[in-house]
Image 1 (tube, rainbow, N blue to C red):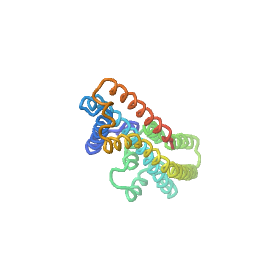
Image 2 (spheres, rainbow, N blue to C red):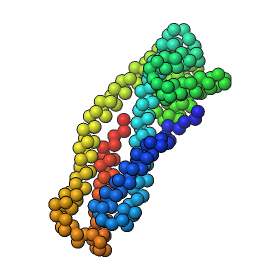
Image 3 (spheres, helix red, strand yellow):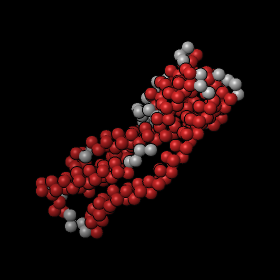
Length: 247
C-alpha cells in the first residue's frame, strides 16, 4: 500500500455521475447562450473542468474523514499503551479496537495494518508513521508523527504525549466543524446567486420567446453571448474561491 491522499481515483459510479453532471451543465449552457449544437460542442471542455473540481472536493472530504479516523486511532493506541503494550504492539491492539468502530475498508484500519506490516519488516515505527504523514498531507498526522518520533528517540512519556495529541486533534476537529457549519449557509446563498443569471435567461426564453432571438444564430449575437458567458464563468469561479475556506 502506497496511497497518496492528494490523488483521487473515481469509482465507476462516481465517474458516470460527474460525467453526466458535466454533460448536463454543458447542454444547458449551450442552449441558453447559443441555441445550437456547435455551442454545446465548444463548451464540452467544461466537462473536464467539472471532473477536476469534483476530484479536488473529494480529496478534501477524504482528508477530513481520515483526520477524524486518525483521532480515534490514536485514542485506541493510547489505551493499548496504557494497558502495558509496547508502541509496536500497541498498533496491533489499536487495529482490533478500530475494527469495532469502523467498517471493513476504513482508511485508518488499512493504514494501521500497513504500518504494522512495515514494523514486522523491521522498519522503525517512527519511520512508518512519518511515511504515513507524508502521504496523507494531513497536518495533524504529520505533527503527531514528528512528536512521536521525538518522544520515542528521547524516551519521553508516550502515553501522555498521545493523549495530549488526541485532545488537541479533537478540539481542532470540533472547531473545523463549527466553521463549516457557519459557512454552509453562505455557500448555499452563493449557489443561488450563481444560478440567478441562468434563471433569468430561462425565464426570458419561456415568457418572451422572441425577445432574445437577435442574440442567436448571427456573428454579433454569438460574440456578445460568448463575452457574457466568459464573464459568468469567471464570476462563478470567483464565488467558488470566496466561499472555499480551507479548514
